[in-house]
Image (tube, rainbow, N blue to C red; front, side, top):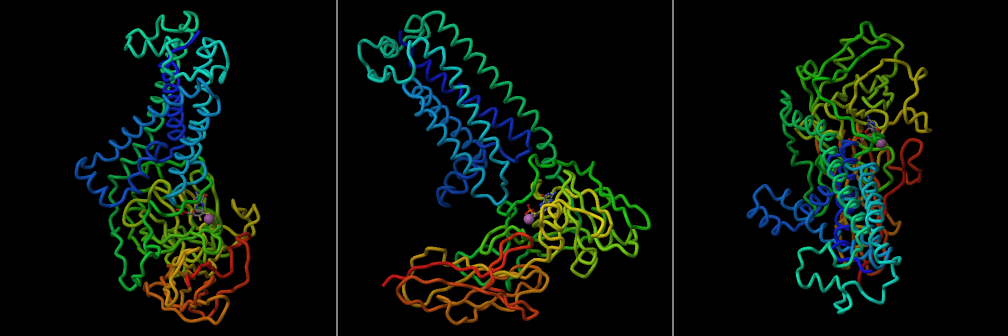
Length: 540
Ligand SMILES: Nc1nc2c(c(=O)[nH]1)N[C@H]1C(S)=C(S)[C@@H](COP(=O)(O)O)O[C@H]1N2
Ligand SMILES: [Mo]
């Protein structure tokens, strides 16, 4: 007995819908900014060449994203139908197609954005598993009807228009009652239809649930969009910070491109109206500050380059932004720090902790409780509504996102999240430098080659950089002057390259005269050291 082709297609489409809805629910339950489908749409927009994108915006106006999401969903329906049909003859072919789809989605979620973290791929994984389970559930009655397992009728391709294939004949005649007498025996037919209806219902329920679960984040995004932050100005990149070299990492990191590191599986979503920070411990009086109170304080603003202790030499867990907030020193002064205290244990809404030297919080580097990044309220992933920013220290000892508690204390008396796992207690940023152009593996013409990148020694400042070819003599490059010691600086140098394979290396010198060490150390326990090198080959 043969089943109909449309039934297999429908099974594929419903299994696909089920997977999309469970991934959507998972994304919303974890407060992830976007579902996998939207992530794919955003990446398509991002990767679309400028001219084409402009043409699309001309035609579609600012509905380009919803239109694209609709197109992606339609294409998916086609692919899911194909997956269903493939399932008739093979068990691995549909799995492969679904795996490919899942990989595209995972890449869209993880790769291009600095803002993703590992758990952002969870919705894709959940969706993929749902696809496989739903497909095998829905196709079971069809398989029974076919009277054999996958592959049994491989000699008779389902799509072939042999006269013997009654179902194809029925389709060819455009029969409206395709479910009927065309192929499925009554019992399998009922089993399949009941299963299909149940799957469609379940997918719809899960989708609606996802929408409801996501309401909290949408509401906080709305509030965030309406927030007024007096004293917060838009970023205005100092021209002296730019050397104008092509293809160098932008000096200002856009929030969307800013690396993201945290232990949050579900992103904390906090309504500013419910936010407050408590300052207590070794203080004269405990102080609680609400968001509106904090927002009423005088703001301080600064360019600060933040980086992660886990950044390997040459890595990109580093970003530079214009931060606006309230000096932590002002708040600590209101509480009155008692003698003997040397640390502040910071705690986030999700229970993450770090201990920061009081000195770094109260000296002239203007450590702040930041309310804005690049002139806008903090993105939720970067700590909305309030996070700490301390120039010169790695994020893991200072940059608490979603901060809610500051306990004045002593290092000797506390343990913090990462220090219990073997990371250093203090985390001053180590000087480093990176080559951005040419890229590793670049193929170049012989002669003069521009080498360029960024270098940093937060809160000390970079005095210069040098480059070397194949471990030879160091030659000085030029550096830009951002007008602060708390950010990375752009640098460039020109080297003369002969045909052949070469290694280019860079090292920096800070404003204290210290030369960046070539000794290679791992990121654990307190930051990597060593020189960044790139391999290039020069044609003859
Ligand atoms: N609440 C919270 N804050 C946190 C962390 C975290 O896991 N949880 N990670 C820290 C680390 S290790 C770094 S490097 C910075 C990264 O900040 P970003 O994600 O905004 O780039 O945040 C810090 N603040
Ligand atoms: Mo970090």
